[in-house]
Image (cartoon, rainbow, N blue to C red):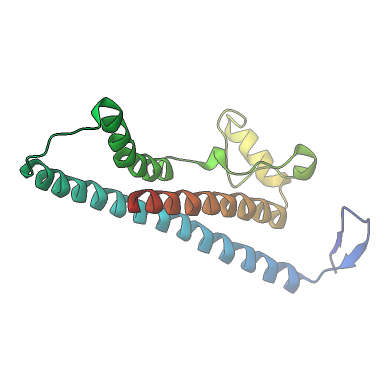
Length: 170
C-alpha cells in the first residue's frame, strides 16, 4: 500500500489507492464548483453593470426634462459623478483578471508545489520546464493549492460584486 508522510509532524499514515482517488475526485469537483462560481460572478457583474448604465441613461433623460438650476456648483457636480461612476468602477474591477491579486502564500507554505495547474509563462517558458513540473507534481498538493487560490479569487469577486451593488443603491 502506498504511504503518505505528514510533512508537518513526520507521521507516516497508510493511504489506500481508493482514498487517494477519492481525494482527487473531491478536490477536482470542488475546484470545478469554485471556478463556476467565479465565472458566475463575472456574468452577474456584466449584466448588473450594463443594467445600471441603462438605468442611469433613463434617469439622466428624465432629469434633463426638469428645469431646475444647480445650487451646489462644481463640488456638487464632482460628488454626483462620484456617486454615479463608483458602482461602474466596482463592477469593472470585478471583471478584470484578478488571478494575480488572489491571496498569496508564503514561499515556505508552498514547498513542493510545482504550479502545474497554473502556468506562468515568465517562470515556465518551455515545454520541457512545464513537462518537468508536471512530472514532479503531486496531484493532491497541486489541486489543493489551486483550490485555495481560486477560492480566494471567488471571495475577492464576491466582495467587489457586493460593493458595486451597495454603491449602486446609493
